[in-house]
Image 1 (tube, rainbow, N blue to C red):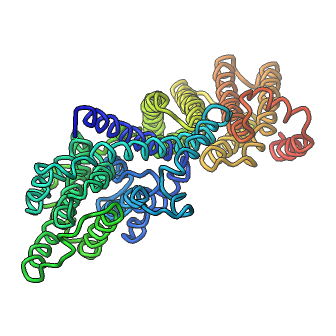
Image 2 (tube, one colour):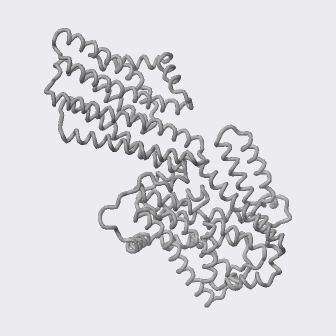
Image 3 (cartoon, rainbow, N blue to C red):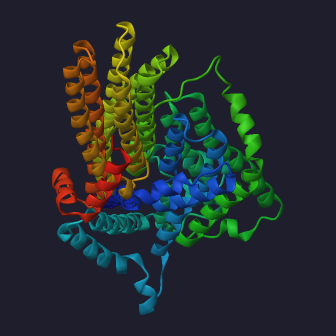
Length: 580
């Protein structure tokens, strides 16, 4: 192996790692909301968590990324420690998919059809298709598909370059002696752990081991311990991710480490016993691409079968190693660890936005109630809800701005923009709720009251605004287009009611049934209620435009108002329901 072979090895390794990273990122974007849906199906059932971890890792080709996501979920309180154990075990099996794909590189045959399955035969075609998709497609989904194909092609070219560069080592005695040394299981485990900890990917380190098999110097006796060590080394990513997280998140990283260390220890003892008693010939046989993939799968499946039934004991172990803190530990809001998986981060963010919206609408409903029956406790609750809504708007807005710096697919980008716009409207609704409360308090402090007829009219307007807020909440929470279409005609009814109430107030003033001071408060009430309905209209418009992929909300609403017979039908229904 000369100087130029070393350069080729370095170049091949760089292409291999770059291709794996490129393909993994593109797969995440391409999976998009499907990935969020898979993770959302997690239950307290460990088997469901196991299957979710397996499928998610097979999709994104990285057990490290899956484990970091789990750390983020547990840190945010979205997943329990018990749930996370099954996911981590599933991720360890899901990561073996990469080794099976890479094992295609070991195909050797003179048969034309068999040769077609060799990566060096079909990856040029994949690269061509990928570059066409990337350069000429207009949709992000097709571009991501092209990036996946290109990433895979680069990965396989890199692996082929590595194999070519190290092939000359088959005649180097020092290289042969090094792998004879790795037949000592302890040294093999250490070598695998260190390499994987450096590159932070067990899939990549297994791929490198597969590439080295072309030298013919690696036996299964040396490969088995290295594979075991690779599974320990990959835990470094989750451990680093848990720094600064809460205790449960640290326990997740420790579960990942404990699972692999315990599994390795047990299977290492089994390997020692088998070698000492039976001395099977396979341990001295030369390893192949396919054999490494089989060994990798056997190790991970065996560990899971061994430890999945003992998940409860594993949980108790990590709780003992990381004991509970004194007092209640605060959960982390909107964990930034999830930003590296944008679809999951957005789903995480949407949950907080829904909590914010629910608090905002609850504040509005309670403030309307305070106009008719005021209590100090309810007033305090309204202000707390408004403060919480303000806090949510700040953290959600900051989080979405950070998310925008990542490469997002079209769906994630659209939903992110929608949430960012809508949270502003819900925050303003909570502000109007406090304004309504202050009007109720002013009436009490000045010992003023509206006439019975005025209160009856106010009740009609207030009820219509409460309903429009509930529709806006439903439209946002469930992306309900039908609820959105109900909002605009109801908003038109609210506008007309406001003008009627304003006119009726002037007539009461002329008859001496109302005072000027009470009139100022009346005007404030009408303004705040009407502006609340305007914000609900904005929310509906945003839901409608994103469902129609139309970025001009005002055009959408104008078309609905002027050209829709359904709008007129709904308007007449609400006008009848809220007539004075």
